[in-house]
Image: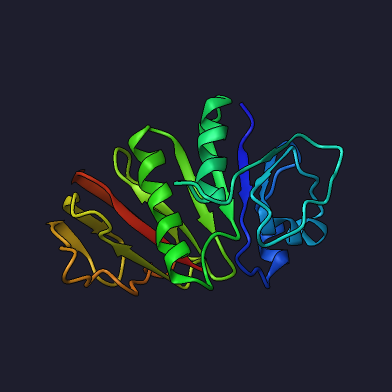
Length: 206
């Protein structure tokens, strides 16, 4: 099935970096002020959702779901739930981190939700690529400047890192001591990260 790309309203400066990661057959959901990125991304919306409190409804001839301003879900979370209803299992989220910290942290939790469902999900911004490591090991090639591991929910146990400047062997990274920041892949190698149980956030910096 096609990948679902969800576009939020956080700032994007390096459109070239983002565009390199987009596919011709992606299904695009633009969330409210995420529509400001449409021209620079060069991708027409497949679906538009939002309460339009931060961006005027452009009235495009595209399926649009208008949300109430008073609701439990942010526009981005609603877009994810709507995509799940439509059967999507592979997600790329852009324009969802940076700027407001509350929205950034809230949107990072989307990775937890999608991972719990067994789905693939990546958040991409100008500087990095973010995904959860849980059931399957992750690999990081040496084209990335740095990579970091962050314990978001207290669940990861037995973290192992290989072929990196700082290695781990079935260790724990607690929430109150995030010592897995700014690691480096050994030149010419491919680093790997795996967990015995739970999940951990992997951030790969360009």
